[in-house]
Image (cartoon, rainbow, N blue to C red):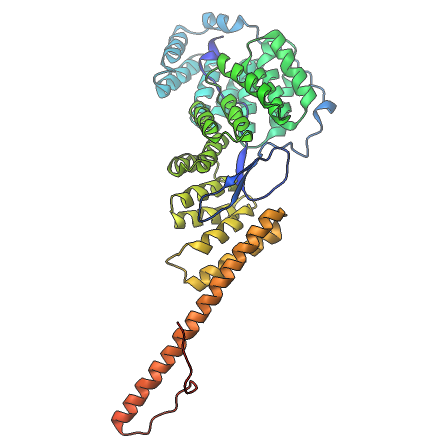
Length: 460
């Protein structure tokens, strides 16, 4: 099919957080780098929407449009204007070398012949790849208006919905177009992935296998099976399915991302980094994949590389508090403590906030000096943040012991600092008294009594 020259994403990876939480997809990772030994865990961002009925209760909605026949995409070239055809073919040749020029060529072809739905779609896919989501959505919609049964365009629209967290909307779009015809195979393969994410194991498996019966080399159906197996902790089968998907389509970023999660679950962090790097290379516009890459780079101590991808993630999705949480960890690893402080505060401010940032701020203040805070203020804030975190999150026995230890350490430092300040104040009073005596003696006046008891011993 002509549109195969451009690949787009239809699923979203999972994001990472710091702290304690519950859930069958969480993986306990090693402690974060000193001096802030937080416990990092995986947090899903693709949990089922509570407002969406169970998949088993919802039959695919019938639609009246006729799906595009496989040969229609070839036939459309014979119906468009010569200028549109020339622009389109130029775009196809440029996709691998000059994306901007290819995009202009596809847009020219679509303007020349507005009914040229494949040109609209390829323009949308390139815009999508560049992270220009609104423009991509408009192009996909033009493709569906030109050819209502064109499956790849519906998959593209669903992908955009997934990327902004609208799982229910994406599922609804795909269900409306998940017909049994071969032309709707891309829709059903994408829907299988959503069902896998929602935890509808049997329905997702049935749909994925049904797709493979019609198209035995469908990479997205293999991806859906890999997602299912990972959620069932069947890691060998998941790896096999995902590697098969990658063999069929080496540009399928989601398959690499899913493989990275399998490797994280098996505590194979260096291999997970490599998998997420390939995912990010294939899908640089998906913030969740960039976030995951940053999180695993943090785990192996590659903080500068983590900063690079996490800054891109927050630029793409500035309302994701957990992305700022991971960015703060990367800054902390690079000893950019002021930047880490700002990132953690951002994680508290947006999207309802993430309580793990309270913990990370508490530990950050415990062991690092800040020019705008005196030590006593910094340490008191450390205790306040740690106590606030403990009050908001149900923590494990191990984490409770660590938090108590951090608070005790901070309180001990506070006590020492308060005593040090008391000694300095007392010495200042003594110096002032001596200076007053000396001034009085020089003036011939009787000496003033000192405030401290005679013979009081001072200690440093």
